[in-house]
Image (tube, rainbow, N blue to C red; front, side, top):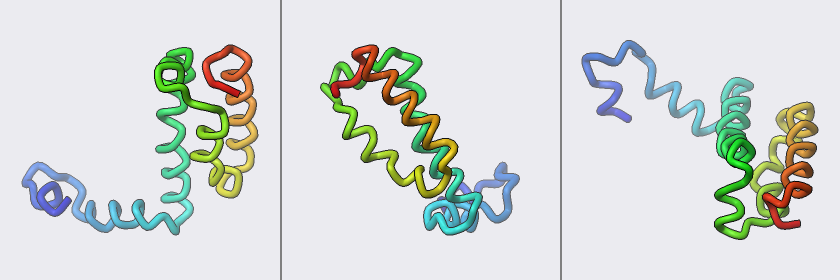
Length: 96
């Protein structure tokens, strides 16, 4: 990260501090970013009809376990996530 921060083309002067803030995850912004970061692979699996899940024999409980923290951080997003997760099981993309 220090190499990126020191690069002359880097327009973000406090990139190291921002990175560390995101890694620690205590601010509202960092917590939201963690939620979004975790949802991106989930969305990829949904749009690919669960290809990676099917290829690797993934179960619903495994996906739920990786996303459980979202319930605390954003209950509204978690409610949407659970609906999508159930849909994936119904479609046969995830093992129940």
